[in-house]
Image (cartoon, rainbow, N blue to C red):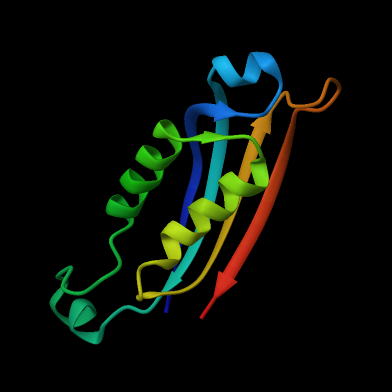
Length: 117
């Protein structure tokens, strides 16, 4: 079993429900942890046969977030988690999404969710 961490993925998207948030993209910061089994053959041969592809899932997350419109941070976080869990190689995943400057005196607000098989 391997734990893959993708840290501080910075993406711009529509997030929020205030009038200015509906027309202006904002930054979100995404952190993902993914546990997936590593096939023995991959370790023995040093080949990516049947291994979880973190580059592909990262590209899918980027596309999903950039092209989407989300009113709630909770919905955005859950949708990313669902996207990761589509891959049957994933046994467990945790996603945290930060919305910088969402509150006046806070650096950011974040939502964290996880799922397992």
